[in-house]
Image (cartoon, rainbow, N blue to C red; front, side, top):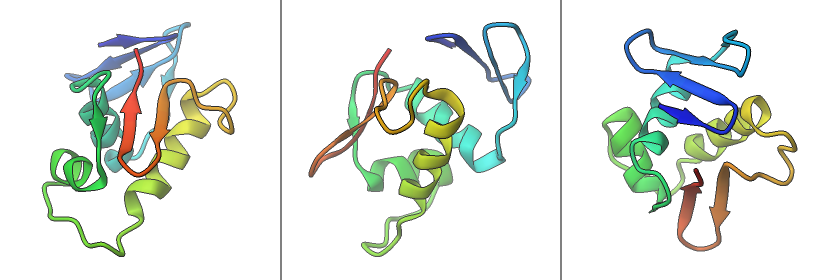
Amino acid sequence: MKFGEYSLDLDAHQLLDKDGQSVSLTSMEFDLLKAFAENPNKVLDRDRLLSLSHNRDWDPFDRSIDIRITRLRRKIEAEPSKPQIIKTVRGAGYIFVT
């Protein structure tokens, strides 16, 4: 799966940059990125992201998705403070823009 300057290799369980170099991701970050890549241009709320990436139910106090998204943005966004790939949709969730 390709997006921007990256390629997500589902079989090898890795993210490659434009030069074919592996970008270091934790297993949970990879699963979250995979969930986004399989649902491009759709707003996904925390509940849906947790079930897609971690196969568990959402707890209203669970902020782990937000933390992982912040970490992913640092790795894949040109300017993590102004995300263009994983955008926040206020009051709704996040959208993976391809």
